Image 1 (cartoon, rainbow, N blue to C red):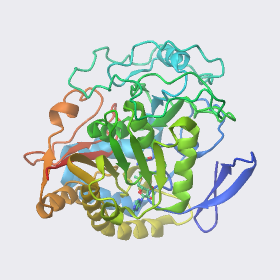
Image 2: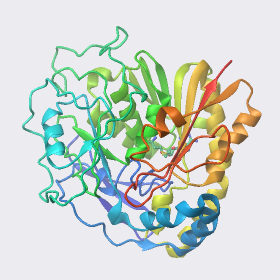
Image 3: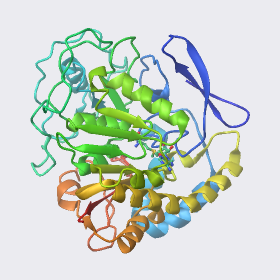
Image 4: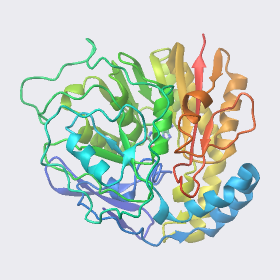
Length: 447
Ligand SMILES: C[S@@+](CC[C@H](N)C(=O)[O-])C[C@H]1O[C@@H](n2cnc3c(N)ncnc32)[C@H](O)[C@@H]1O
C-alpha cells in the first residue's frame, strides 16, 4: 500500500515479523513505480499483505510531457514503425498484461487448474504436467470477474523444443534437503525445477498473492518478458549464480524455478530495496534453501573485483530508465520530475557499463553473463554491450535469436536491431503483445 508524501517520496506500509504495520520510506530510484512496472511488479504487488483484487481498470495516471516528447524524438528514430504502437501501449496501463509465475515450492496444481479455467495458458513448454501434490484449499480464489467467453483464445501451438529445458534432477547432492523438523514453511518437497508462467491474451490482472502468516506465496505477478533474461542465463543444477542487481527479486525467484543452483547470491546496493528483496525471498522460498540463497549489499560495480572468477552465471538486470513508469509523473513533481529523470538518464550508460564489466570479472572463464534492462533506449542497451565488447578482452557475444526469439515470437515482438551478429534481443510492447520493454544480451567469458 503506497501513500504519496508531499516531498514526492513514497511511503510503503510494510508487514513486519512482529505482525504490525510499519511505515518506511522507499527511496526513489528507477524502481519507485517498479524497476519494471510490469516487469517485476505492479504497485499492488509491492504491498504485503494484499487482498484479492478483482480485475479493474488502472487508475488514471498523469503523462509527463517532457518525457513523452523525449521518447517521441528518440524512439521514432530508433524503432521506426514499431514506435507508434509501442507508444500507444506504454500510454495505456489499462491494456498492460501480467504473467502469473507459479512458485514450485508450494502446491500449485489447484492454482494451475483455476488459471486454465480462466483462459490462462502456459507461456513456456513443459508446464502441462499435472502436479502430484495435494490440492491446497488455502489458495486464493480467482478474481470475481471471470473472463468472458468472448475473450480471444490463445493459440494452442506448443513451443518448439529448442527452448532451454529445465534440469530434471530435483535435488543435487549439494543442495540442502528439506528438513523433517518443523520449520516456518512446512510442506511437501518442491516439484522438480520448472519455470511455469501463465499468461492471458487480455489485460486481465490476477489478484496479488495474499499474505498468509507462515505460508509461502503460490505465485508472483510479472511482465512475462522479465523471464527472457532468466531463460537466457540457462542456470543448471549445481551452478554458482550471481544476481548482481537483484531487488525486488523477481528474477531471482524465476532462477530458482528453473534449477537448483549450488549458490544464488542476490546482490542489491540500496538498503531499502535490499530489505524488500529479503522480504520477497522470505515470502517465496522455503527456509531450507537459506544456505543456498544469500543476500549481499555490495556496490555491483566493485563486486567483480572482490569475487573474481567465482560464478558460473551472472545476471546484470541493470538499473535503467524505466520506460513504463517514467512516462507518468508521480503527481507531485510534475514536469520537473521528468527533467530530473532525463538528467539521470544521461548518467545511466556509464553505470551500466561498469556493472556489466564487473559481472564479467565475477564470472569464471567459460561462464556467461546476461545483461538486461527494461528500457527501449539504444544508449542503455546495444551501446553498453558494444562498449564492453570493444574494451574487454576474452569475451564473446552469444546469439539468442534461435534459442529464444524464434521459439517465442508468438508471444513477444522483437525489434530488428540492425547489427550482425545481433547485440541482443529487444522486446517492444505492441498492441496485442504488450510485454516489454525488455532488452537482453548474453556474453560468454572465454578466458
Ligand atoms: C531493474 S532493478 C532489478 C530488478 C530485479 N532484478 C528483479 O527482477 O526484481 C535494478 C536494481 O539495481 C539496483 N542498483 C542500482 N545501482 C546498483 C549498484 N551499483 N550495484 C548493485 N545494484 C544496484 C537498484 O537499486 C535496483 O534495485
